[in-house]
Amino acid sequence: MYICLCKSVTDSQIREAVANGGKSFGQVRKQLNLASQCGKCGMIAREIFNESLQHHVDNEQLFYAVS
Ligand code: FES
Image 1 (cartoon, helix red, strand yellow):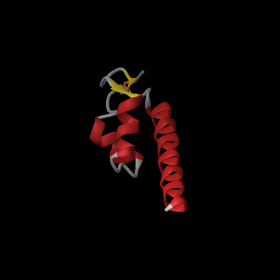
Image 2 (cartoon, protein in one colour; image 1 turned 45 degrees about the horizontal axis):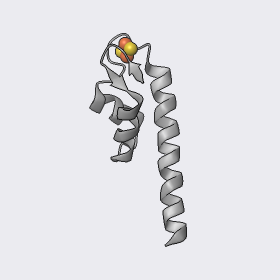
Image 3 (cartoon, helix red, strand yellow; image 1 turned 90 degrees about the horizontal axis):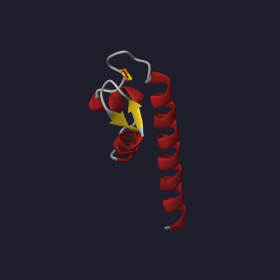
Image 4 (cartoon, protein in one colour; image 1 turned 90 degrees about the vertical axis):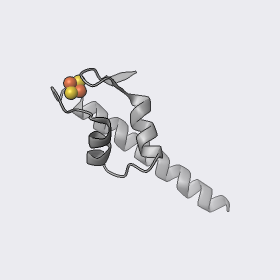
């Protein structure tokens, strides 16, 4: 689903950026050129980033708990 219409950025791209090591919203925003035009996508993009980061952290903890 497109999150940023101005820059054609999808929720999958945000999740992928987090999975590939994006640790801050600013870093991911810069990498994807997200929310850099009208800015209307900023709030939802940040929500998706936070949700993805939490999911990523939970998965890492699960991995370590098993090994
Ligand atoms: Fe993302 Fe306009 S919708 S900058």
